[in-house]
Image (cartoon, rainbow, N blue to C red; front, side, top):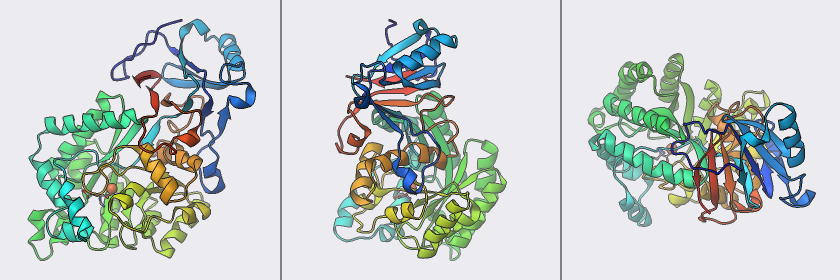
Length: 455
Ligand code: NIG
Ligand code: FE
């Protein structure tokens, strides 16, 4: 048997092209595409218990070849097919899952990964009753992070990004979306997008950059009477063309919220971005119904995020879009509601009942969610949003992949997809949200290469 070596970065090819994961109690494939309605609760889990235990010849295994999934199914059957189709078993590294659970690598589809400084002071302010937008209006909140981020060197941002990506990796995450939005001037926004891009190239986690120039109105525009409108014009005339020319951002996002950017301003920004090839995502109705969900549907956005306070019409619009085959993924961020100490969580059950596909993400950022653990977000989703553990797992794998327009390549264990896998130290995926805050990840595999592991 070939000995397993951990390969830094996960990009260099192993000398052995194949990888066979065996001795799993459960393999959760999430096969079958985007989940919505009742299907969100069907993870397509194959249990070894039902067929005589993890060592039995019918226990589920996963075979990968040169970074892609080759096959999954009962061990003896998969081994037979491999030999018959010209993939000799001698060319596979065997990985012993030791009775654990194998899932697709987790996908964090909404983060503000890169920023300077910290904001622990706001926790105390909130405990004394200060509101989130009140702190922002007084020049704190996002604006204090903007000042610290503008002052941070690219090397400092790279080091910060590596630190938190490595935390995410240790929690089973293999793909992360990373928004700009703490620069709010062209030069710093470009720097943030470039750092995100460089971090993705470094690996092992894939980092998908999103331009969020419309995160807040920066201080230099706030002194003007028509400050927000002037900043929107700056976004349209200067930032967006610069960001498009740089070519790092894949998506555009806007904080569409009463008191931040209106529905109309958000529409102008996202429509212009789409003309440059940047697909839309929306920070929608986080604090009050602001037309964000409706706008996401109108624009055919990939995702409407937060949705803690959508209007009835917004929920209906999301339901209609899903029923019509143009689903906008509702990316819910329950850690943010929790950390803001707000009572009203997103109406996740209503959304699922209406057939809207739901994803869960951390919203990792220094103000409202300094939390890098996607499994902990799953726990909060179960406790506060009422998701089942299986729904929560679909929300951080296949549905999160679709929210990033990557559903054809990642998010499930299906032949031909990228071999991004997490092996958990628990016998069933239902225990992932059950142990909040625990270190449950035994190994992470990126493109068929083990990139993180411990006993
Ligand atoms: O998604 N709400 C807007 N943006 C972030 C928070 C950013 C911050 O407070 O620094 C969010 O919660
Ligand atoms: Fe956010």
